[in-house]
Image (cartoon, rainbow, N blue to C red; front, top):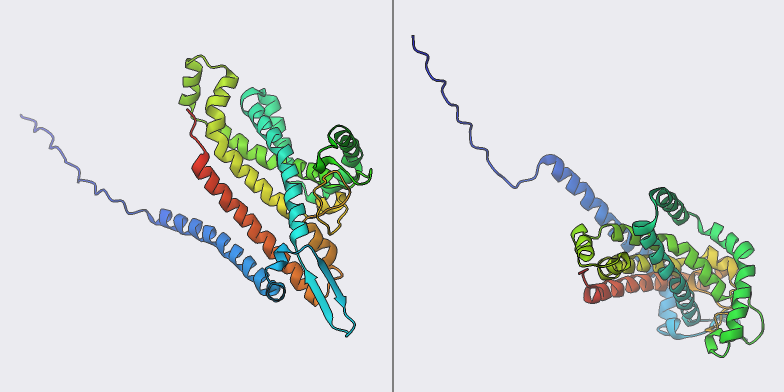
Length: 328
């Protein structure tokens, strides 16, 4: 009795296609919709600011950005006369934000490097939790902390800086008054933006390709040599991006600056002296008592701040694309 050999069943050839599954199409549609919603929201904000502030921009023209006066008064004929110029507060915004970045960026980068390459695991987890928590603090808490805790110490630091570097114009003061100055406001802002820069920098540093790290060690590099030759060039893009994100928050910060700065509508490059302001704090100070004409000007000031923030981010992207080098 013979047993027939089993017949081989050849499976049907599977059709290879690049068409995504329905679930992938749905997910892609949801992600795309949320991505475009952010652009739509930004466009609606810009449209609202332009619509509400157009009358002030039309009346003042280009002098709204270049003029150093901001006043509304009634002339002898009973007609309201308004002169709105944002230049003094734009200068204050740039000065305070530059002070904040000058302090925050080195500290944030060094903190990110410590967390990524040096900190023990237990300390690392604790510090990451604290830094992430600091990034979520409301600005009013920073303002109160800056007013009650930081300001007395910062006044002493300002006096020392004036004593040793007072021959430099920006560190000179017309009167020996060091409280509520752009210097103190910059320190408070730096504390606010350090967690943002640190978090982003740490994430980028941790993604440094392992083969590049091992290659640097194989060539005899020390840990610091590896960081300088591989990690920092690789993570420069992330550091710049985090700094620009932090700069956007510094430009628009209101309550913290308002709490520790003597808001005076005057251009002040002497960072240790007790006067100055930024665009956001000026809007808060004047909005409650502003009339219809001045409200339109304040909204136009918000539009200028909005455009300035976008412009800084575009410039940052251009710089990154041209100058950032890959790790070697």
